[in-house]
Amino acid sequence: TKVSAQVSSAFTDSLTGIQFQRFFGARTNFGFGIVLPPATALTNTNSFIGQLTFPLGTGGAGWGGFSLTGNMEGPLLMAAWSDGAGDVVSSFRQAFNEDDNPPEVTGSFTLKPIPTGTVVNNTFLAYTFLCEGCLDASLGLDGASATQDMGWALASRAVGNKASSAGVLGFHNSGFGDFRMNVQAARNARFDEWAALAGTAVSASTGATPFDTTNAGGSDDEGDDGDDSD
Ligand code: HEM
Ligand SMILES: *[C@@H]1O[C@H](CO)[C@@H](O)[C@H](O)[C@H]1NC(C)=O
Image (cartoon, rainbow, N blue to C red):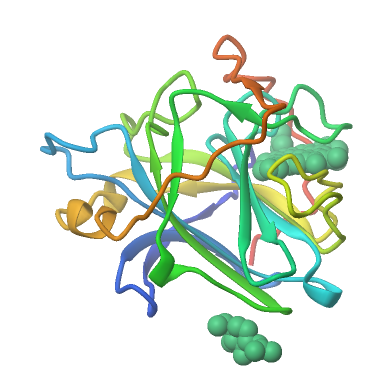
C-alpha cells in the first residue's frame, strides 16, 4: 500500500446506466468499478456489483482482474478473459505466493454476469456482474470501512487453456497495483434494480478448491508496483 494510492471516482456505465465508484488507470485503460447496496438494505447485503473494463492483447489475449484488498496473496481475487469465441470466462482465485498461477477457488461467493454490461471482441473486454456473497471480512472486503484498499492487475499475454475457468494466468505484465476504493460512495439506493439485471451463476471447474478463509488478510508486502497512478 502506497500513501499515494489513487482514489476511486464516480463513473456511470453507458451500457447499463449503473453508477459505479471506479478505479481507472489512464496509462493502461484498465477500469474496475463497484456498487454496494445502501447501508439500510435488507436484501443483497453481502453482495456487490462489479465491472471490469480493459484492453486485450494481440488477438484478444490477456486477462484482467481485481483483489478485494490491496494485496495479491490471501484475499479473494477474480480474473476475466476472452474465450476467443465471443464469451467472457471468469474465475475466482486465491494466491499463496506471487510466483504461481493462483488456483481457482470456490466458497460462499457466486458470480452472476449482467449480459447487457458484457461485451468482448478482439481488442477490448467489458464484464459486468453481480458478485453474490462477496462482501465478507473473511474474503478481504466487508464494506464496513468508508474507504478501503483494493487491487488490480492486467496482462496482455495469452491465458493457457482459455476456454476453462481453470485457465492458466501468467504474470500481470501490463500493470498492477492498489488503489483506494470509496466504499461509502459506492453504496447506491438503486442496487437491487441493477442486481436484477444479473443472469445465471457461473460455475467453477471441477478442480477448484475451497477458499482458505484463514488466509485472506495475507501478507502486506509492498511489492514493486509497476503500477498506474495516473
Ligand atoms: C487474479 C489474478 C491476480 C491479481 C488480481 C493480482 C494482483 C496483484 C496485486 C494487487 C499485487 C500487488 C501486491 C502488493 O502490492 O502487495 C500483485 C503482485 C504480484 N503479483 Fe499478482 N495478481 C494476480 C495474478 C498473478 C499471477 C497469475 C502472477 C504470476 C503468475 C502474479 C504475480 C505477482 C507478483 C510477482 C507480484 C509482486 C511483484 C513485485 O513485488 O514486484 N500475479 N498481484
Ligand atoms: C471492441 O469493443 C469496444 C467496446 O465496445 C469498441 O470500442 C471497439 O470499437 C470494438 N472493436 C472492434 C474491432 O469491434
